[in-house]
Image (cartoon, rainbow, N blue to C red; front, side, top):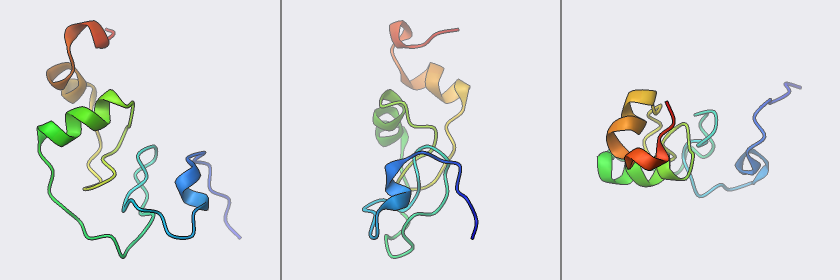
Length: 76
């Protein structure tokens, strides 16, 4: 039995509403279709503190945070 190190509660859910984990990027639910997101959706997810998009699985980079969030929300 493998031990998963991510603490996101969606890993313990039998039927997660998200395809990808916003903390580690692992696939949570294969039955959720993959969608293509834009910066508008990513900005909301970055604002919540997510590291990965729960819809498309893209990893958020520090550069994306600086572009999409207001300056007062970004620490250098």
